[in-house]
Length: 190
Image 1 (cartoon, rainbow, N blue to C red):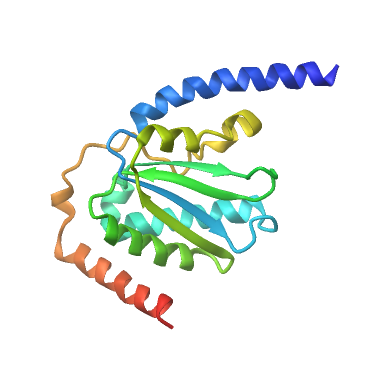
Image 2 (cartoon, helix red, strand yellow):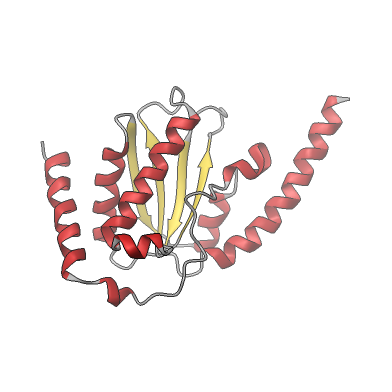
């Protein structure tokens, strides 16, 4: 009796995934990068610890680009984040798409903050999105196996208040970016 129930659940999740893909089309509009965040050993990293490192990573990235008051009012880098466990179902890692202007600078900022989020963080890969349809399908491809747990609503910000990006290009932002650039040199050139 268990097998038909699992098959029905999988079919229901497939239908939910199709609906999610339609939402992702809207949520990822204008996104320019696709990222993967891995741990040194995703098989041994507890989910709670991984979630904490992921939240800290995005908090640091947002604070690099925006002042505290802006972040507190909901101004953040527009992004959609998904938690994945791989084909084994045990290798925790994250994928995201984000709307960023200067991809080179964002990549450096992200690399520094991912490495500094937790002593167990591993590789980070950020690529320019070439096909948004492929990117959003990959984000949601584990939905049929793990359900809504895959969409990381805590770190996802697709409904960001309208903001003028130029408004935040201040000397303070430049200082934060330069500080991160110095950290990049220290972290990756030693």
